[in-house]
Amino acid sequence: MNNKKILITGFSGFVARHFVDYLDSLKINVEIYGIDIKEPQYDLEQFAPRIKIFFKVLDMTEIEQLEALFCEFIPDYILHLAAYSSVAYSWKNPTESFMNNSNIFLNLIQTVQKNNPECRILSVGSSEEYGNVERDNLPIRENQPLQPVSPYAVARVSQEMMSKIFSNAFQMQIILTRSFNHIGPRQDNRFAVPSFINRIMDIKRKGLKYGEIETGDITVVRDFVDVRDVVRAYYLLLLDGRAGEVYNICSGKGVSLKEIIDMIAEQVGVEVMSKMNMDLVRPMDNRIIVGASFKIESELGWRPEIGLWETIHDMIQYQE
Amino acid sequence: MNNKKILITGFSGFVARHFVDYLDSLKINVEIYGIDIKEPQYDLEQFAPRIKIFFKVLDMTEIEQLEALFCEFIPDYILHLAAYSSVAYSWKNPTESFMNNSNIFLNLIQTVQKNNPECRILSVGSSEEYGNVERDNLPIRENQPLQPVSPYAVARVSQEMMSKIFSNAFQMQIILTRSFNHIGPRQDNRFAVPSFINRIMDIKRKGLKYGEIETGDITVVRDFVDVRDVVRAYYLLLLDGRAGEVYNICSGKGVSLKEIIDMIAEQVGVEVMSKMNMDLVRPMDNRIIVGASFKIESELGWRPEIGLWETIHDMIQYQE
Image (tube, rainbow over all chains, first blue to last red; front, side, top):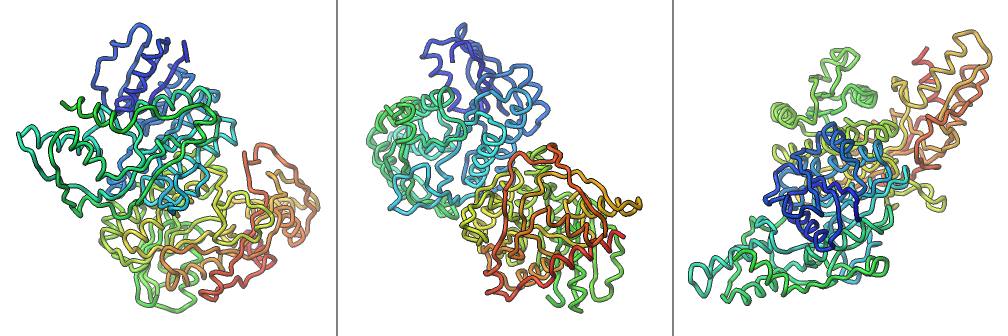
């Protein structure tokens, strides 16, 4: 990726920030154009001179603006991270969630097709696309039939179907992921794990040894993968992933939210009791999601390197 | 459906018009609220007093307007016909096509869920959802895995996935169809068959015995069903279809566009030579689509009653 130009959508989110950190660690020269509906909360100059970053506030539902920027920059690669990624929000506002997933993606690929069809695009999808999977089919491989069970998941499945169609019909270079739950330092407290950490640390900050936190259903099992491993996978896929192909990005290990809470409590040094609030329980939810990452491992040699204990440790340190 | 209230979206299209004709033929009393982005081209008073029709120009992407109208009328049934149903258009304007299919549908079901969740909704889908189907799997049954190959088809698949999710999560009464190519009198000349008829009749109008018409790929085989049979199926499904279930609406017979052209030429009394224009050929297209209507036949006793020769005859007569 040396001396190349990369457009990053959803630039102000925590995944993009880790991607830039990763490029920085590679000591390569790149030009990045970041777009997002909100400003990033850090100094973009800090990576100069090797990494040159431009940024613009841009709503991707406005295709003319997107196209103008694209034609000005003409990227070699696009890391498409922009999304409304909250499942809960998609139940409350399905239309808005849909528009900010499927429609912005369509605007993006239309723009690329018209102005630089050779550009390689990484379209980030979600493990939520699988929906409920029978235990016999765990860990989930990429050929598992998709049965989305939330509006968010449906939007992601459409994005994927659309990518395959455009890859086939116009030989576009769209590479797809189904990324499992990624966690790590700087993740927003709206998400489950950082929110648990924040509230468990609050117990300690108050000088208490014991406390209660309200949660949704914490018996659900998920596959957590460190965001720093995830962005390394994205880099490899942008370079060498096969167009029109989908890759799981996962740890291969299932952990319940209850176990996560226990691990946080142990590291923070307090005792925690979870109280289930039915308002936080989703209308339908997948019981167990655990992925298999054989495909990306065999094709690109990627495997996760950071264990859950270390991730939680770094997340706690970040909130301190 | 006697003394009930029906909201019909896409009211100004030819399917809605045939649905109203069918209700009229049943001699029942109903109240209809029609919405569409354009005015209907016929006199709404002609069905009074049994059928009382209100109409409003309304863009369903505007959810507030949709909700206000819904709360004023509170329908018992919704026949959701509004769609951008051109596959060709969806290749040129995928975002707009998507928005006017998936997003308007989401606005509709959100409105229903909030204001009258018992309302029964018929969500009309398309045979295009199946995509390319191996010959061994013809005629296509409802359990065939979906492999959409156009942006339009992806929008329809999302609409269907979303319907199932809302039916399961909130016990909404959404019934689904995959409707095969419907044709009949009053169909717009933008569609293949009426456009063939129009151009073949032009040959005759000019006093010629022989002429050429430009077409796309006319070797593709489709399952044509008369719109008057289709609306009868919609009526039965609105009354007694099972929520969350999908029903094929088809004739069960495969006919190539070439055969259709020959049949039109024979009835009109001219000879026609087709010339393929590559600009009219779609980037990817299903070779053969033929459906099986066993499910709706066994559950509701529906089967098509009008043969292709008769349909073509009535369409020619309409254009005379």
